[in-house]
Every structure is written in structure tokens, then in C-alpha cells.
Image (cartoon, rainbow over the protein chains, first blue to last red):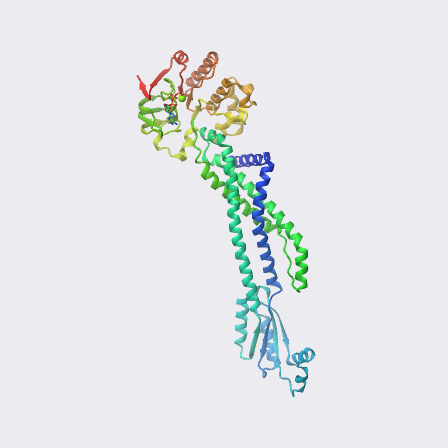
Length: 304
Length: 217
Ligand SMILES: Nc1ncnc2c1ncn2[C@@H]1O[C@H](COP(=O)(O)OP(=O)(O)OP(=O)(O)O)[C@@H](O)[C@H]1O
Ligand SMILES: [Mg+2]
């Protein structure tokens, strides 16, 4: 165990030394990797921000209109029953009188309404679903449930734009996935090529190590560490890029969103996001180095 | 320890370097491979160290039928053999210490033990005072001795040397021969390719004489 640890520590120190000895070249490679990682990361962050808004501010209220003959007590009972249900944040009872008063206040129908002998409006409930139950499917289910009540005349729900937002989110996710995959392959190629050059530059050393009985794993190990370090360094830089870009546009974006009455806000990367980026970068670096090592080290056959 | 049985080696360019070569080398023996340039001495050593595989015939080393030693087993096999190369094969950017330590490092020898063995090996070739030097700062003969120190540092049971005294003056050559004799007396088996006939004869050791890829009895 200690031997294993010291072997890896040795390879790590060796790889770090290599990178540190050529700081400019290392930085260039890291910047290329960083740009390739920053793009999908930024997109992912944007998608998350949008989804967050969709989750909070876009919950759609349902309005339940009762049949005219249903008395207010039954409506209130049903409201109390609904409040016990999962996925419902609040239920407000709108009595026929309230509704009429409201209509009188802002409707151009006020005069016509005034001419009526009695209140033509039914009692109603305004239901505000919980954030985690406002996808179009769960709203649809709720609507079906309410419609099945015999006292209910009509359930109104404007879910069209929820569906639209869902579609946009899905599209953004797909685009992120596409860009991420493409640029991930790019990172793999950049690191693979860098490691290939490194292997070529140290050909003699590799050969001699093989001659004295260095195993494939022993020869490969420092290169794997180099690749992983490139990936980590690149993703660290990428996180910096994303964070900086986010800070630059956050002000205007939030202002714009507020002017539309939206609570949309660009989210910062956060510890989780940083961890994810480092993980992805490290794994890509390791994989790229592995591919290069598997391909190019085995081709070096020692001669004597 | 080593057995060649009707071994043929034909290189990819069609050159037949060895034809029906057979010999036995017992454990604890020191044997010289002699013959003119191009006779096939290095080819024999390359077959012993698995740098090449025979085209035909049996090569048995340290109890292994080398034909059965797969690619992944070659490193472990080589760690049992100390090799001295005709062209030294030192790492130019690493110190003498690092060079001699390399076979110990790849074998995951503990640091303290590595340090001890490197010093002992350098002492044996008379270059302990150059432990910090870079190979480029050494004479060719000194580099050769560093190569020898690297081969003997892990104390392998089998040492294979290709022209180990090729760049040494007669005085140093004799010292190296003395070292080899001491290693043999300590139980090592040595196979040494050399065309320094004076030295070979002085050693009194057995010779396997090659000519045109054949063993001359
Ligand atoms: N890799 C190779 N490819 C093709 N031919 C080779 C190769 N290595 C050696 N030969 C040929 O095989 C023959 C034997 O070569 P080898 O190196 O074994 O000779 P040697 O006895 O060690 O010679 P020297 O004393 O000059 O080192 C030579 O004719 C040489 O040209
Ligand atoms: Mg030779």
C-alpha cells in the first residue's frame, strides 16, 4: 500500500516537474482546453438558470369553476380537502360575490353586469401548484382529477407556454450535450496530441526504462498524470472564464429579466459546478493521455 | 541457466545472423562470446534478453522457454537480467545516481535500499565520487563503467554484457575483468561479448566462438 502510494506520488511529482519546467507551453495547452470546456459549461449554467426560473416563477395557477348550484360550504370543504393534497401550495376561494365585485371594478362589462337581476357567476377556486409539481404532466393530472368532481363545471389552465418552455429547455439541454460532446472530443484530441509529443520527446528515456525492465504501467504512469494535470488545469481556467463571463453579463441580464417581471438570474458556478468541471477535465485528460500512451508507447520497442 | 538449441535468427531484411546455434551455459559460469564484427555476438545477447525472438530453435533462459514469455511478462523477465550495452544507453539528463538507480526504481526497491545498492555498485566500478555528475561530464570509458554499475546494482543472477571493455584502456579493462570474476565467484552467471582476445585469454574463461552466425567448436 505504501509502495503503491509512493509510486503514484513519484509519478505525480515527476509530471508536475515536467509541466513546471515548460510553463508557457503548459499554459498554452491549458488555455486551449479551458476554452473548449468553458463553452459547454457556460451553456449548462444558462440552462440551469432557465430551468430554475421555470421551476419558481412559472408555476401556473389553475382556476376551478363550480356549477352554479353548488353552495359555498361545499366549495370551502373541497378547498380544505385540496390543501391536504401533495403538490399544492395554496388554494384560494373566490366566492361569486367576490368575483362579481372584481368584475365590476375593472371590467368594461360593469354596466351590463349591473343590469342583471342576480349574480350569474359561480364560486371558484384559484389553485397555486407547488414548484415541484408544475411540469405540464403533473398539471395535466391535477386538472383531470379536478374535472372528475361532480361539482366542477370547468377547470382552466394555461399550460401552453409551460409546454413551450419545457421544449426550449429540452432544446438547450440537447445543444449543451452536442457542444459538450464535440468539444470533449476536442479536449481529448488536444491532450492526446500533447502527450504524443511528450512521448516522442522522451523516446530514449522510455526505451532505456523498458530495457532495464520497466513495466508498461511504470512507463505510462507519469504520462497519465501529465494528462490528468492538463485536464485539471484546463478546467480550473475554464471555471475562471465561466465565472468572469457570468459576472460580466449578470448585471445587464438580470436588469433585462426584471424589466419583463421575471425573477430570472444567472447563477454562479458554485462548488458543485466547479467540482463537476474538475472531474470532467481530469477524466478527459486521463483518457486522452491513456489513448496516446496505449498507441505510442507500445510502438517504441527498445533496441540494443 | 542458458540453453540455445539449434537457434536461427533471420532479421526482417533477410539477413541470417545466426544459424543452428547451440550451447549451454551453467549457473555460476562466466562465458565469453567471441568472433569478428558481424559474427552474431550481439544477436545472441539480444535473444537472451528478449530484445529479439528466434526465428527457429529453442532459447531457454533462467528456466524460461523464452518463446513462452509473453509481451506483458518481458519487463519482469528483464528485471532478472543485468544488461551492459555496447553504446552504454545512459540517460543524458539524469545524474549518475539516477541512471544507476533506474533498474532498482522500476523494480520498486525501497529508497534506502536503492541508495545503498547504487553506492555499492558505483564503488565496485570505482566511480563513487562521480555520483552527482551527468553522463555528459564523464569520459566514454567512465560512461561504460556507469553502464556496468547500472547492470550490477540490482544484483541479478544473470549479467549480459556487450563489449563492456570496448572503450577502456588495458589497465581499466583488467579491473573490470577482475570485477566480473568477483561477481562470478559470488554466484552470478555472466555472458560477455568481446573481441578483446587478450583479455578473454587472460581471463581463462570458456569461450563460445562465433563465425558467420555459427558456433565454431
Ligand atoms: N536489426 C538488424 N536488422 C538487420 N540485420 C541485422 C540487425 N542486427 C544485426 N544484423 C546483422 O546480423 C549480423 C550479426 O550482427 P551482430 O550485431 O549480432 O554482430 P556482432 O557480432 O555483435 O558484431 P559487432 O562485433 O560489430 O558488434 C550482422 O551481419 C548484422 O549486419
Ligand atoms: Mg555487437
